[in-house]
Image (cartoon, rainbow, N blue to C red):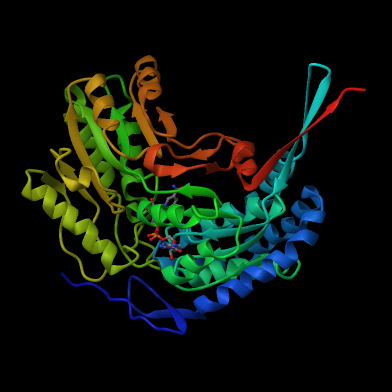
Length: 461
Ligand code: NAD
């Protein structure tokens, strides 16, 4: 297997193009023993930041959204070069942060307004106060969106933030912080760069809450490290999302979703479709459409206009995916599409049929462009297998509307799509169940997770 290895450096964090292995740029590493000083600066800046109203903080961030959009081509290029996704998707990710900024910060400011409850001759004021200093630790798969999802609600709620982005994608995170800092007071938002050691120092430091998005393993370590200080946690972790396709489904719609959601961002999406369960009576018709849709995906460099899937972000990720594919084949899975070896960090979009739960690829997160299909007798078997996982971020079911709704209600994921994708409408939280997370974010419920609720009760006059 030919792969591209990522060189390491000690005082400089280099970022490499995963398609070519070329250096894209570098940032200085924050020595782990300086992380406490960064946190101290965030703590010193927090009282003045919290003294502003939430709406004042929101107004400060609005022009940052416009600045992100004004630079989206340049920033999208940096993002794509270091992460690998097609340039249009890199630019789109920057624009998604920028374009949604004004609406998002207003929504957060509104969500953290005090609420009044009345009863029994008394009234309670529910106050949503900032915790203090928030550590935001983020992954590489959406390297500007994931920092944005943690940083913005933490800031508008009145916390100051120290961001530790993934060591795979430091450049775009660094640029993001620079853009926001054009509009923020000194010390309110800082970034530290490095690998696990910097993340560990941040978690161990004098922070009040940790908003982490990443792998289950790192989440478990962070939870343990946060325990002595009972630090508040939001953990958004991995998953093994199922997609169920039953009789009565619009097969064109189901196959289009299954292919796109298996292959987009090279399968490196927390809510990727990682398991497909198809009812036997419609299996052949569905597979024809799934294979047809799969042919529409082409791997290539992020700047290649003909490619709509980039490489895996790093060698280890490619090796993990291929290990799972080979294990599945050795246990009886059939390759219906793809499966060929490629140079560099590329993995071909691949369709496997006949997968079973004794294969690692059906139980451990893959995070690669592999559509794994299993045949089920009926809805009951589909539900049983879909729920046979430690994870529970998203799940999707296609079928006749009545059956699909009933099946959807029986699934144990946090976000369930019925005849559509799993994402909720505006205002809904992004929430994982079971080992996919603790706490959640987005929407008013999620924004309040960045706050300490205080209940002040007085007698009614
Ligand atoms: P990762 O856990 O390896 O790293 C994430 C971040 O944590 C990085 O910045 C890393 O340096 C840091 N880190 C690692 N170990 C740490 C420790 N012990 N203490 C403190 N910091 C530590 O994850 P990744 O490979 O960057 O991202 C992929 C994972 O993220 C997948 O599992 C994916 O499902 C998950 N993810 C989840 C969501 C969600 O919303 N649930 C969204 C995106 C990605």
